[in-house]
Length: 259
Ligand code: PGA
Image (tube, rainbow, N blue to C red; front, side):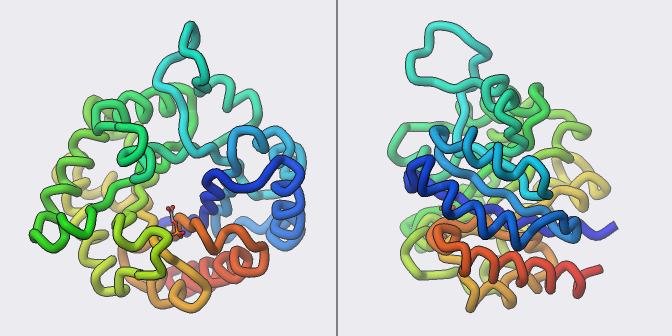
């Protein structure tokens, strides 16, 4: 069974609820009910309900960009998994490099959030990736291994199948610098190898590994044709419907080729 390609848009801290609806409408209209690939949009918390209402009858899935590891209680400003579920959220981005860098999220925190998401039937999009300094010091694989082992701690093989990994080299995020398809494939293959040692080949072959970092319509086809690249987590190019829909088309084309 080939892995279903996933094209996910990370809108980051952009778009009011009103603006989010404007961006979501043409995407929903174009994606409609297709089931060849999984399309996910991840607006900010404040637009989840609005966008969720719009996608109700389409195959577009709703994702959040972060989540608390706690179930409920005195955690001012936090949002729980059950609150997201109630808004029909199905996916949640966890451990994005911006959260790791600006909000001090460690592998331990990311692991707790991943477990909380899985316990609430949300699909985590677990982000890993090295900085430029780490790449230049030839530490890429070590960094990725630590993030994977830390992120998957205590997660069973059965649960692991529901985790989506996003490999996002930090130096490629929002910079216009994309990893070449060969560079990205090398790390994706490494991630799958590590997943094989953690969970065995059958499970590792099922887990989707997305690429993120300046993915855009003109580089997507080449990236998505690589064996271990199962989709994209897209920031900048997800903020215009035209570019995002071009990426959806690239996802569909890659899906046909890999079938
Ligand atoms: P980018 O962001 O596509 O703007 O590089 C990707 C991400 O941070 O998820």
